[in-house]
Image 1 (tube, rainbow, N blue to C red):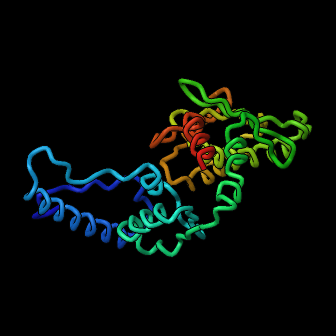
Image 2 (cartoon, helix red, strand yellow):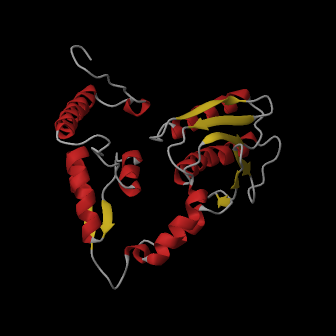
Image 3 (tube, one colour):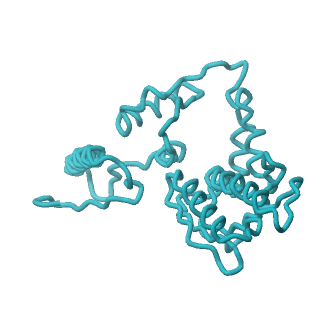
Length: 252
């Protein structure tokens, strides 16, 4: 920044964001920086000038809010804390917040949170056309295997294989976000005979993955027909958070 005593890093998350929003964010950060400098003048050495927000608030930064209708929050104290955060960070989004108060029917029961969590951790994911995905995370990478299942796909039936793969691509992109998978991800689709169909599939898969707010790249398809994907890690995947999330649900 010209004539300033600091620099600015614009992260990849800013891709596609209107320039005015970026300018507004820079101005907000400059004001926060000035406040920290003023606070530092009245503090002794090694004092903490600012605390990091709790995980449940910092995670909101990674939520893709486009098209989101509301954020439902249970508990007045939690609602107030998140509301104050939004007033500072996303003032235009405060209207999305809604306080839920019903001690006789907890929010986790209303939205079947426990059932949804259990479903999101299963290895098998069924597709509407009768096919299914097998999702297997390992130490090195995550493998997503596409199977035609109940939908019989003959070797010459390219239309059937394409239908399974297109639905699988959309569901795989959804599951990658839902389970917060990161690092190297390999997707093994049903074999396609046509190079044209393969090109169409990869194009659509890239489109599905582009909706992810976390940087996700479809690298290419290998000689063996395996699709390579990389996704930036911003927090632990869902399967590593299982015990913590289950404890939180039971505590409610």
